[in-house]
Amino acid sequence: MSVLEIKKMGEPVLKQICTPVERVNKKIKTLLDDMAETMYKNEGVGIAAPQVGVPIRAIVIDVGNKRYDIINPVITWTEGKITDSEGCLSFPGVFGDVERAEKVRVEYLNRYGKKKFIEADGLLARCLQHEVDHLDGHLFIEIAQNIVTGKFNRNE
Ligand code: ZN
Image (cartoon, rainbow, N blue to C red):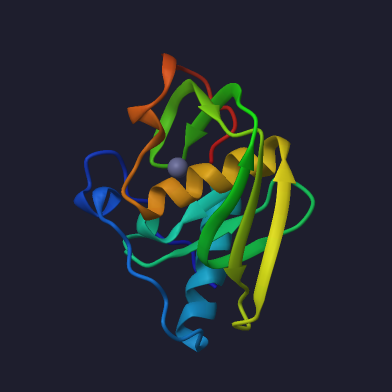
């Protein structure tokens, strides 16, 4: 596994609409492993493939209890609204309040190409929405309120 360079604010790849993964092969598994290592190394809780310069629909999330490798995610259900602070590995030291759905259901393929779903609330739900936004070229900064810069906190 290797730690990859994280693309920062201003890099065009962060604004791209990412393409679906057609084949879940060894190359994708290696990318997911490298994304995970990059995320852990930078103390993030989530990372999307465009953040390492690869515009495909793949994300890795670990909010503290389990690593999820998520390919071609689709949010199929949401409930409620909740506002909380967010950060992003592509915007080091920048945090803002973002309104998100409180609960989500996401359907996806796992690293073995198997159909799975997650129903989540709390930080996992927030992180899923943040990462899926990345796959559509959307950044939290576009919708964040009360933006502050400063010391390191959580990064999606
Ligand atoms: Zn992010």
